[in-house]
Picture 1 (cartoon, one colour):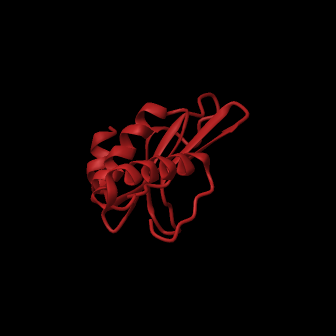
Picture 2 (cartoon, one colour):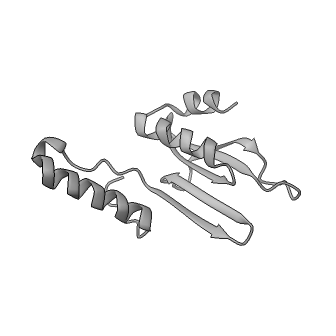
Length: 117
């Protein structure tokens, strides 16, 4: 995720927490391993994005549908070169938080799909 600048309060909180821990414990803590995560409320919707989507990434909608007008909830996973690289969801917080853990663990795209069927 190097070079990706996220101006979202979640990123600021994670950086502040890491700085405080490193101040108290020293260099043994290591560098911040930042996983991009943002969310936004848009009227009746709450979009959450974890990871970094790029043009050409593979997409698999595993919960809900992008076409549903009666129930707009969904979770879509994104993969690149066989690796899980991102997830985007609307009103699927539990599922998206589980996918954040898979992203942090370096899960494959297939593993993530299998975990969300």
